[in-house]
Amino acid sequence: MDLSFLKRQMAGDDALVARFVAIFKAQVPAQVSQLPGLCENEDWEELSSAFHSLKTQFNYLLMTDFAEQMRELEESVDNGETAFIATRIAEFTKTFDLFWQTEFREN
Image (cartoon, rainbow, N blue to C red; front, side, top):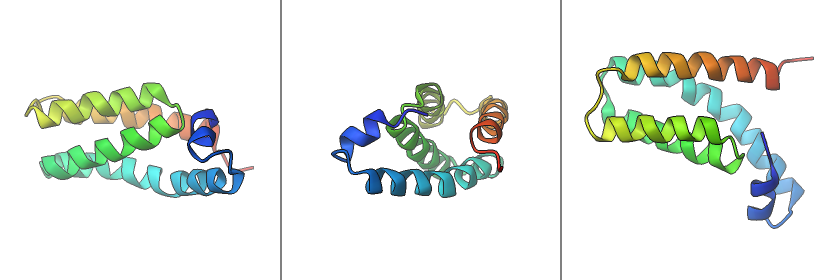
């Protein structure tokens, strides 16, 4: 996670940066955990929106690999290419969970 882009966007306001990171930490795991259910229910519009939201949040923290995965998944859903979305979500979720446990493990 790289906060340099976010700091530039927030004009160096550390309080705003800290608020964004706190929101990120509170919301992103829940959003990621909803992806499999949206896919299972074939709620493609909501799934596309979730990918878009996550892509944006990952971009703000320069988490480019995750952002790119969200972009690709969003594009696939928007194009009706959903045959392998569940597998791709499972792979992403596994990688994300490992990242999250490493980056934000409780002390």
